[in-house]
Amino acid sequence: MTFNLINFVFECVGAVLAWASVVHLVRHRNVQGVYPPALVWSALWALQCPGYYVSHNDILSAVGGAVRAAALVSWTVLYFAFRRSARTH
Image 1 (tube, rainbow, N blue to C red):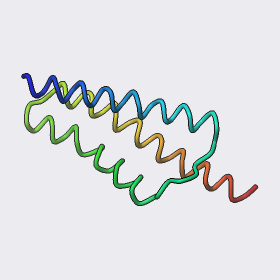
Image 2 (image 1 turned 60 degrees about the vertical axis):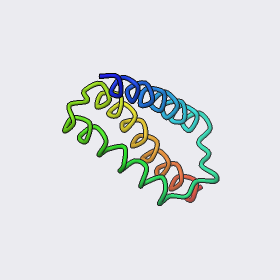
Image 3 (image 1 turned 180 degrees about the horizontal axis):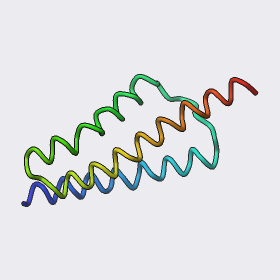
Image 4 (image 1 turned 30 degrees about the vertical axis):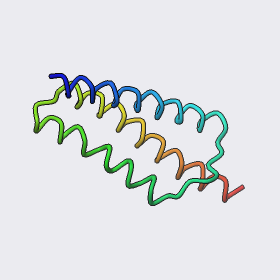
């Protein structure tokens, strides 16, 4: 349980930071300095983490990972939407 709890804390801190990035992106609509393949890879990696944690019965980590994955996928979708919008203006 100790490693599950430690990982849960890391996942939750990552989730808070990722959601802060989503809020920042929505406010500023500026996406400079982002390498899209790294962004997509990070979102995909985050999506597989909850399943991995569940397979190891690390339920707390799975919950934290799911919240972080939701934030990273949201950020990725917004990134591509705002990038496309910037090109049309």
